Image (tube, rainbow, N blue to C red; front, side):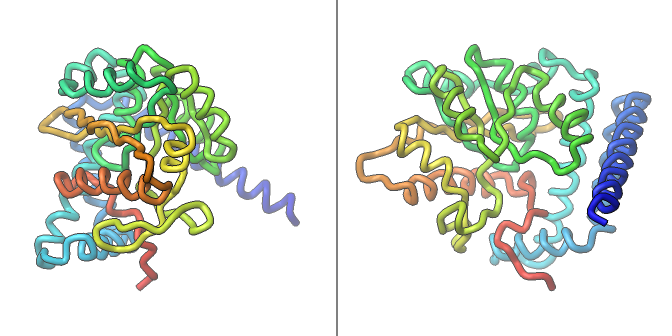
Length: 302
């Protein structure tokens, strides 16, 4: 019985992978303007057909911005779905090598990159880069690795579908030399990169279980956040910066925070709170570019 169930899952995963491969192959045939149009349409259909995530998005927006009217929240939701249509199109262009690193660099305002490079230069034990699911975090990682002269790694959760993970997602995320550190047993790989003077990127805006995190304030509401960024900074005295790749017109701009230093009186909790505040500040500036479809506050089903 167990073997039958395992084979069923394997077959389901293979079909998912085959479908993804066909869709990616199809995008290669489309001129760029049409490609953006297709993904714009897909994002609008996603908003209409996926009732569950549409509901989560609206409830999240109400929680984060209670001052907005229902019409304003609906407009902001529509803008968020449009944004991710644009982002998906750009990611596919890069994945299929129709957009090069040099072209991406030309489309990005990297005037704040020297802030990160300077912090990295002065750091004795590497640099921890925190970010969230805002703007285009995938291309930010790829471009950051291309710009840096040190080793770069990203902490990530491995997909359950190994066909997608091994043949599509991981090859895409490592195209410019980024090392993937999966959450199961990631600490050893993370410390190896940091000790070599490199930088490690962490997405820290996902919901976490209490055993894996600490309770902090996020948009004036309590949430459980992963404690790893604060624990690593506190234990190893590693500087932390927040970095984002925010969409601006037909391109992007890179945002790099000042270093978040660890003071003598800081605790893991206080550091994690400051890390979360850095994410929330940028979300407030660019609310239509955050992934509101994620159930960050663990809202119950309606």
